[in-house]
Amino acid sequence: MVTQTFQFSYSSMSARLQSYLEDGDVDFLSQIPNIIQLGELRVHRDLDLEMRDEEFVVQFDSAGSATKPDRMATVRDVLYEGALLEERAISVLRVLQSQTSSGIPRYYAETSETKISVAPVPAAGIGSPFPSEVKQPNDFLYPAESAAILTVRGVVVPETLSLETQTTWVSTHFGDLLFAACLVECERFNKNTEMEQTRDVEYINILRPSVKQIKPQHRKDYARGLSTSLMATQESA
Image 1: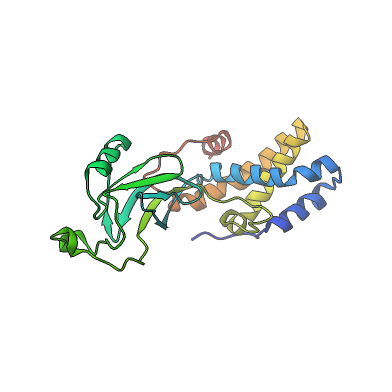
Image 2: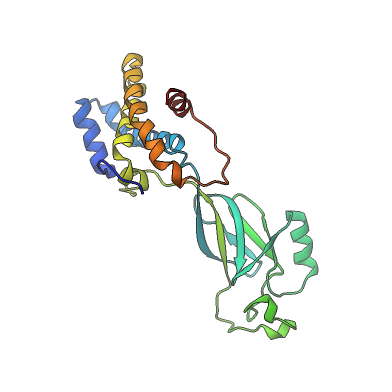
């Protein structure tokens, strides 16, 4: 179970950085949103939270195309009404779309960074209860007003703190680590090498127990890369 020492919102983190550093410089204050984002990205990397699996429901159009969910980096599975679709190359899918009449989607391809397409293309009034129940094309009719949807499972990039996103998983569960990471980024912005090194040591001292705390929750199928801070932490452990 993940526990936390204290929590931050975007607003409270911004206020805490200003009061802690006692820096009222206009240029520094204008960079606080970027500093917080960089600090949280550092925590994502060092706790190996850069990617995680989520599931979304999306609707596709009459051409069999759907927009990927925001922040989805990689599609793992695509399902149509409970049935798992098989992935195909884009060129193969285009051929299937052109040669196959409307019906139950059985194949998919990532046709761009933001789009997924399926084949066969479902027509209005055509749906699928489950493939095992289908005998003839006309056996799977549904009301024309029903929306054809896909369930997409994939790897997404976590959100970071912003004025619009006041809290995140990291700010809620690892507030102390996030604050320490932001202090490192503050000194980097101020080009204070000596203080940056001091802040980095403080960050690593908080990072070490945090890595041990989060380790049981890691996805086991994700090939991880180690950041400089994390390697230093593991080498000294």
